[in-house]
Length: 147
Image (cartoon, rainbow, N blue to C red; front, side):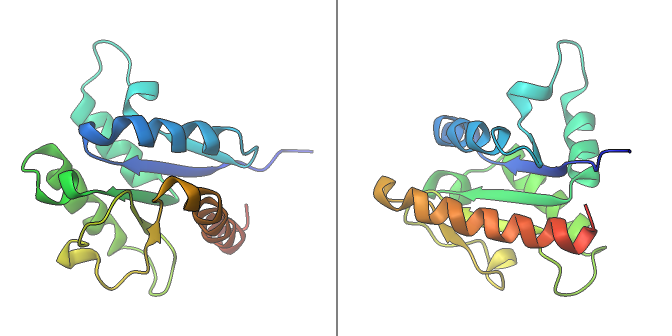
C-alpha cells in the first residue's frame, strides 16, 4: 500500500530571525505528516540557492511567513522571497490556506498580508497555544489536499 506524501511547508524568514525559525523547524520536523523546508537544512554546497528557494516555494503546500520588526523593515532578499510567495499564492483557489503569517514579535504585517489571519508566536509563554493553532491550519490544508 503506497504511503501518502507529507505536507510540504516552506519557512520564509529573515536571516536575523534564524534562531526562532530553527526552533519552529525542529518542532515541525517532529510531526510525522509535515516536511518543512529551511534553507540551512536543505541547501547543499554548490547549489544555486536562489533557484532552489524558488523551486521550494513553488512546490510547497503551505508557506509560513515569519514576520518580525526586522523582517518587515529589512531591505533585501527576504522582500524578494515574500513577493515570490505572494505571486505563487495567486495561483491557488480562493479561500485556500497557503500563506500563514507568523508574528515573531510586535510588528505590523506588510500591506500584502494584512488580509490574512496571523499567529502571534510571542511572547514565549504563548508559543504552545500558537503552535497548536498553526498545526490546526496545516492539518486543514493537508485534509483539503487529500494527503
